[in-house]
Amino acid sequence: MKLDKKKLEEYASLKSEEKRIAERLEQLSPEIREAMRAEDVDKVDTAFGSFTLSERTNWQYSPEVAALQEKEKANGTAKKLVSTILRFTAPKS
Image 1 (tube, rainbow, N blue to C red):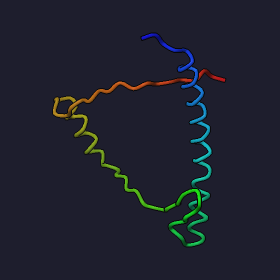
Image 2 (image 1 turned 180 degrees about the horizontal axis):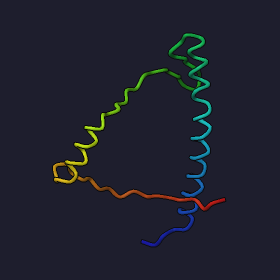
Image 3 (image 1 turned 180 degrees about the vertical axis):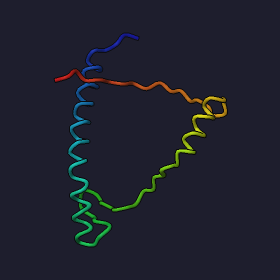
Image 4 (image 1 turned 45 degrees about the vertical axis):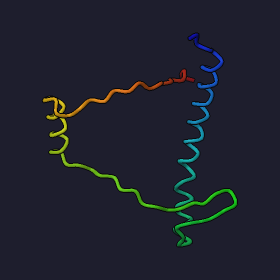
């Protein structure tokens, strides 16, 4: 299969746009959350979609758990799963 430079260029362009969009979403999200809390609502339905405040739980483990993970990696108990991904790095501007 021959590499199509147009596809590569499109990919690079979309990744750049994705970064810009992600940055803007990161700015808007706390503003919207704050406004919803100020109005004491956890869901807002609009013509362009619904916005819902929900909780997500993340766990922070003790150093003992991290040490156990390292031990299992070293002794082969932990299983290594390898997948292939496409990584793109934009030129510095």
